[in-house]
Amino acid sequence: MTAPDLSTSYLGLRLANPLVLAASPYTRRADTAIAIADAGIGAIVMHSLFEEEYTHAEEELEKTLSRGTDSFAEATSYLPDTGVEAPSPKKYGELLTSIKRKVKVPVIGSINGSSDGGWLEYASLIQDAGADALELNVYYLAAGATSASVVEDSYLRLVEAVRKRIKIPLAVKIGPFFTALPAFAKRLTESGANGLVLFNRFYQPDIDTETLSVVPQLSLSTSDDLRLPLRWTAILSSRIKADIAITTGVHSHIDVLKSLLVGARCTQIAAEFMHMGPSRVQLLLKDLEAWLVEHEYESVTQLRGSMSAAALGDPTEFERANYIKALRSYDDRLR
Image (cartoon, rainbow, N blue to C red):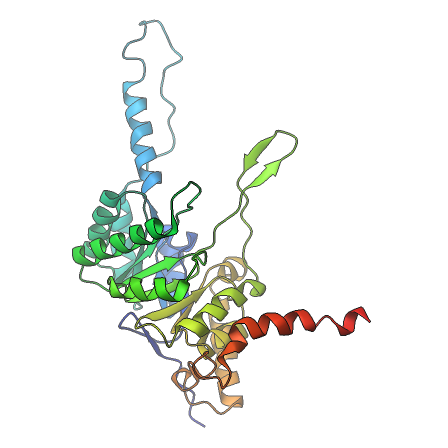
């Protein structure tokens, strides 16, 4: 039997397979990005260009250079610290260009911004650096009294503005916390998004009870985290005119298959590669191909979407009916 075709398309880009390196520390160095490309990854998403990170670095540099200008000449406490070079958007662009020149797979830039000016400036920078596409990693927590409509409209204005600024394909990475996600997803595509990435992980802070302080807490995903993006991809894949990439919770070839079955074009993976290294790419591809052969599929395109909500006889399996069945599944255990 001929080996199954693992190729897919995402944002109009041809990928050799549906494994994509999600935004992660892998691309902070060219050598590690090149290593995972050489291992067979389908595409690479650069680590996010955080506007606050660079704005803060510039502010700190300004403070360092001006510190002590109004102090007494004998004062020594204002002498600047040294050793850490401030990052810059320019260096991000140079790194992206360097990686792009040395790999044969699509390279997608990523921005996580906080102001309209930052989003637009960095979008142009990433396009000029040679990125094949751009991913807007929108991480906004509506902690105040802002209404849902105001939040959604701000996303839409951002997408419209960036779409007008660049010509390369545009994906938007969002969180799951929207009241009516299908309607909002449709509006995002109408505003210019060519793809959606489901979902952004909102890392939750913890409390240190000894110091009584709020501390950052980063826990890498597990396969259990896949269920939320699986459900929404199954619901959205036939309802919106945009490619969907699933991220969060993709660790095995079974996770990849589930994602494809509900309609995803590709899967973005970070935690698994951080655990296992670039060699994990080949193992995932080998297992994925073996499953397709065993189940007599000729390509990943053949199975894509065959278990989406639209393809199932009863689409409520991904809606309220699933909720009821899940609760009842514990009945026998309580007897």
